[in-house]
Image (cartoon, rainbow over all chains, first blue to last red; front, side):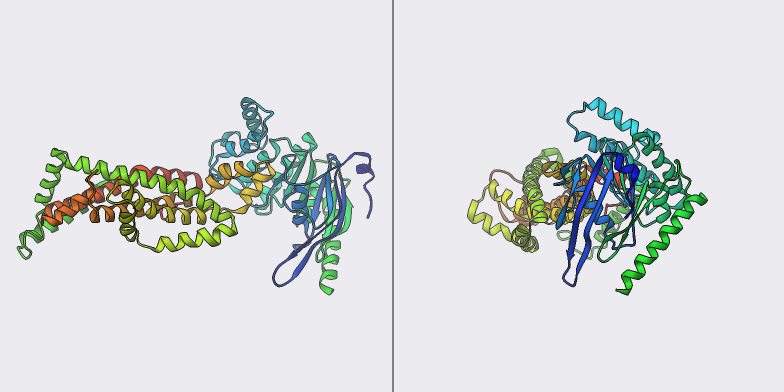
Length: 266
Length: 257
């Protein structure tokens, strides 16, 4: 595993230390994660890629504190993660927006759980983040009135608004069309460059991972392990259609193919 | 406007057919009174205040019993949806009692409470509470788990999750459950009023009952029409706004839900 020279200089935000997780169904036991360790630096953008069943979403759930590992632990800012908390917000693949609230109400939901803010401050922050994702005109739209891309923008604003230290994204653009996705890649890069949040981004799309990540962590299935870690030293903002980016993604795609044949030949 | 016109036309046609049937002379006027007589009865009962008084007595029982049924049923339904123990015990009981026609509670209520308002309330509550429990349980189970997960990552938990996520997320099911509960409450109260005379209040069911005793068909049909009208009115006033709200927010037509 090549260690990131750059990330070693920065303090570790997240330490994943020997995490294992098994799921037992009535028919079989699946080793979703087998002794996975990874250190993510403050302000780093890390993408987890791998075929389905490699445990990347499970790992994200464990970092979020939504799932407990069987063994191993996750440290956030040096403290063990015991449960979910607003300092590590998750943005989900499918729209997890609340249909009984409008766009503004959804962004306010997390803010209302911050007792240190006044109501006026909360409203100001919600306006700010909806504007940031370009939806200031849709603050009072109902969720079902928004397109898929707009929904995920609201979800992004909702995740960013409470100012989490870590943003966990679970295939947030998986259900969107290519044009909407390309636009969101630009937006998310811009937001990341401004805010420098630590982001862990799960995807099965290698190009997407290369476009967004400082590092791309390739995972292999059954049992879920880290197969290889790739540094992506390309300058930002990156264009997903650029040839340099394609070079990296074909390299990772080849490695991904390798992990798959290995998994199936076992 | 067009919809109202077609509805009015339909009912006018129905009354016209009724009048025609009466005029054909095939049925005795005792069995089938003319719509004119029925209208006269309703008008008369309106003027002398019997109708208003009975409607008030009935609605008071209904609203009290229904409110109690919902207040008891809602938390119990949430309980059965989350706890395996409550699902296996209380859930099974609710399912069983929901299949019991609520009129079957009347004899028991009479023995326990006598001919009192409490007996009436008891029957209405028993008619309502089980279907509210089952609808709430069903609603809470059908909430996409991602809502609660998203809320938890934002720092919501316990009571906050219940009141701010689970409850609003199950609103579409709750409203249809409450609507069903309302129908059951209405039915059970009518059954109770028809069977049981209670001196503290003379409800619509009693008017119906005495209409039969006196062979006053105009009264029987008149009161039936009033009961239907109240049912429709309550649906429009109590449930339509909710359904409209849900329809706008969820973007789906939950009317049938």
